Length: 173
Image 1 (spheres, rainbow, N blue to C red):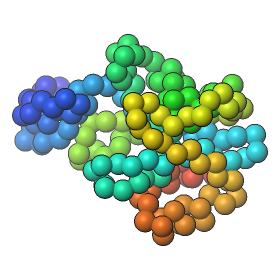
Image 2: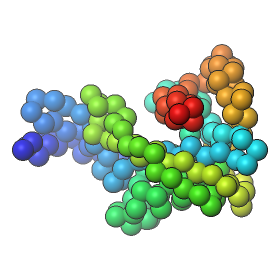
Image 3: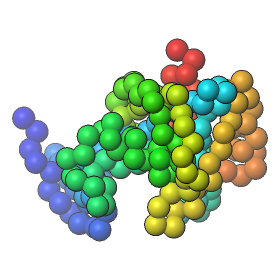
Image 4: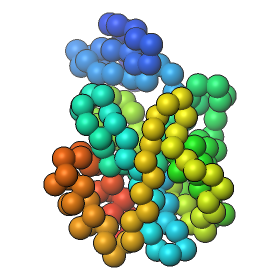
């Protein structure tokens, strides 16, 4: 059995911990992470762009977010978090949801795992854009143009989150 991690520094949102001589970060304010592969009836993939201070630039991402974040219950279900995040970030709801997989986001850096969901039969019910000043830009990209669109955004200087490439693979399976 693995020993409990020892906290080296407790931050507001992240804790820096050590276990068996390995230092890593863990979220202090969330129970997990969800990422949503949302596809419209017109075969468009819903992506978002937002500025990320650690990179100092805008990042192309899938709609995603924390489970049990902020004012929601700490024991929030992953599916509920995915539904909440899709609505907050993009203004869409979905009639059909499917759990796809869970995987480590960066096994040498954090204990965080990402639960991927597929959302279909989308309904636009609001503008999206995020909460608390996130200023998220919603992008509807035709699936047939997805790879070229990502190359173009990257050439424009935007970073592309690795989960976007994982989503492309899942869409092609």
